[in-house]
Length: 277
Length: 354
Ligand SMILES: Nc1ncnc2c1ncn2[C@@H]1O[C@H](COP(=O)(O)OP(=O)(O)OP(=O)(O)O)[C@@H](O)[C@H]1O
Ligand SMILES: [Mg+2]
Image (tube, rainbow over all chains, first blue to last red; front, side, top):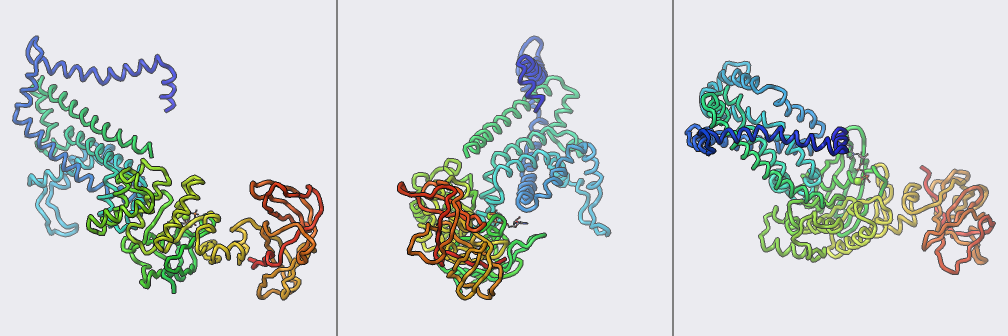
């Protein structure tokens, strides 16, 4: 903050840093766009985009990743909303521990997690300390594999999802609202669905979009577990094609920007509402 | 037995006993205030009635049914919070209808009841607004309407006016009292503001360190405080140490000055140390016809407090405050003058020593 306020006092410097920052983000993007339009010599065309979208692998992996992203979002919401709610309501002491646990995904490299998942779930699952086998290795069936991939994605999305939801919980007085609803006869399910969730709309949406971006962009776990996800496909295509991956990268950027726009619109309206409060 | 009875309620948190052996019986339709200093257990007691805390021991009986261990959503108890606690995602109408909808009342019945509540609390104009579009006073009225919509058996209010500014506080408190009387609803009102408690309650429970110190009408609490704590907490009060001279006639001596009291205290002997208490407004300048308690005093200071003039006097070696109503023709003695003041035998209270 100190550095920032110091920089603000020096208009020349702030202009310089601002330009540098913009260039840092814009230049590679511009280069990607420019490159993706030059598949034909000396002609600007969208042919690379046509090729990329026409590839059957594109649609397959894109749809797959989208479906998994939606399931991951639902699953992590199911996990995190009640957890964060309960911590705010009854276990404020546990907040630091849970916050720490959620950041593990950032600390532990995805490749370690990927191999960890394989070594644990590659073997048949037994009841501990016995030889009674519950199921065959989950990785032997597509459903089981997808399940494990979703669990992996959930862990990766945990830090952002938890923080988004928890910030949302902080802006409403969870305890008092819960007690007010209880004294009006509401049970836990009603309280969460009718009172807590609607007031978390903005933070859930931003958590969801960030999770979406993480899942669609995830390479490591998807490759290690060998599922037909979008990012490994993009990476693979980059190995033997030049222009199409650039086109798809730029298209993904546009998609993420659109998502950010949606977050801005939804959370912006919400922020104004709470200022007037 | 009353409509709502708390018998031998105690509440212990991990390290501290917060409410101890608390007993209270409230009649149907009564408006009772809990008055006491911060941390004396008012909120905790109220929350036990609401079901948010479970008593460590004791029993709560509401309309003949033991509700001690019932979950809050199984009791029919309305609660008003200091922080309003409106649902930010719902309009005024939706907030008020929330409890009715949970009970799955038919939609036309909900509509009718919500309209009734809106007119009761004068919120018709704000029906479709969201909480953030309302002032604090309006939000608290919505909270009141929401709690009342469910026909609660008891209405609990935890310092509902503390977050509001002085003017709204006074007007809303009389509005709350009017609505309570109109509906004949039983209510418990928590406050640490004595004026608030005195002005709207049928009865006041003065609490101290988790116990009920005295229970009585505002008139009783103000005029006949039973303990030094109550006397000090409610209203301004002069207290002084004195010695019992004649327990039967109620004569005590303070700094060599004799006072007669109408108030008999059991078990006192000649020579016992006692506390005496006299309210500032009970003193007046001595005139011929008064016989009892005419004492010499010295005028120390005079302060105008608007409608009241507060005069500091010394009787013996002890400082007292004396209040007299202000009027343009008031003749006041000079500072430093020596004169005589008097108070009736009834004005001199002999308090339990604690
Ligand atoms: N959940 C809790 N755990 C531990 N101690 C608590 C808890 N709730 C209240 N206390 C303690 O119990 C005591 C009484 O609290 P309570 O809120 O009932 O006081 P109060 O009379 O309402 O005070 P105030 O006028 O400040 O609101 C306080 O010392 C408080 O610290
Ligand atoms: Mg309190």
